[in-house]
Image 1 (tube, one colour):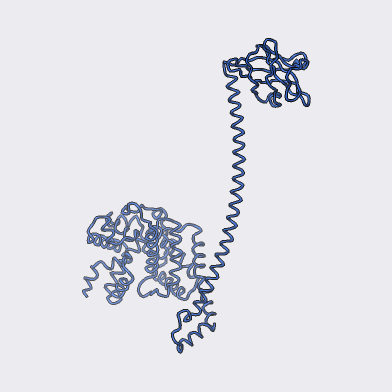
Image 2: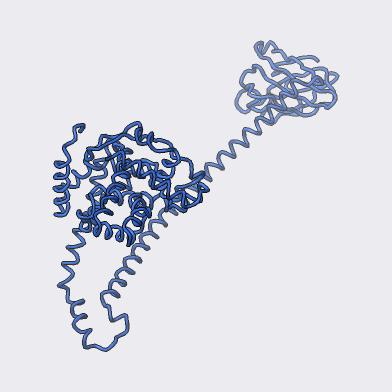
Length: 291
Length: 185
């Protein structure tokens, strides 16, 4: 082996750069051990690369020292218990007996060759089964919890949907009312309080084309118990029933659509028994107004 | 840590450290860490590029160094050579296993924190800054050394990546190491 040729082959630099396999490294080390010149060249190459590596030194961030050292310590700890275990395992009769008998016994089925192994497998199976059972219990609990949560969520959702629907309905009603108020076909009739209730005030919107009648209460005295306000259209002096006002309408909560009226010159309200009457009780007339 | 001890004293402390590690003296590992962590962490970080990964690799390396210490032969080389090789191999395994390399692999790795926070050497009297070294290397040489040493590439991979003949890669790598060795002399 021509030493100079070996040195110039580049293998020493490859060694220094860490490009060689373990076997190749051992080979280079062997050569370096045999030839001082190779040793010297190898050391030089190593010093060069290592100085370059060293030039990249970075002080590890604070706190890392503690973490790495304690992590290292934990990593090497299992060594000790493992050793203790193997030590305590030696005096156990099973393996030694098996070893003693193995010499004179015929080839037994593999399961019996290693009783400890099958026992281990058995123990492992049992442990796995228990673990799996535990896992199932945990999963089942989780499932129940999830189902309860789902039920609650569904109830919540249903309630929300109902609320939403109610809101939609109210919105529709309001939209309709707004349309009535804005519509040019509707004529507004002011119903003013009679001497019986001078403060009372209501408004009727009447569309002669569609015969639609809406009533909008501003202020009305609360009707006695068991009584309701009833709207009348006066057509040529004759009172025509236009329906009773709901409690909500009477307190001015919303506009209410009344019965269709073919023709009218005036509207009036009286207080009647609940459900309304066929003819108005004129003594109870509260508001009246002409178109 | 700026004043470095004379070579012989450094050697003596190294021998002492090796002896203590051989005797499974756990406290010696703390000394080892203080002495070598900056040098090793710097190289690992340069290879894996991520601080958390670098920390994991360094810890892994500490465990490996501890366990395989009986196989360290002081007659064959310095402790630094041996531990550096362990760290570099672990770091390269890490980037190979985790598909670290994506995108353009031939881009010379940007000078990371390594330049900004270069650590004081704790065991190398003949310390030369990275700036000076890179000034001495040609960009081509430096690129190849970086790909081989910190990138975990083989020479054929570098040849393929850079579209160079394998011979050229080998020549440049060799020349680069010559330059570096001369700086140390």
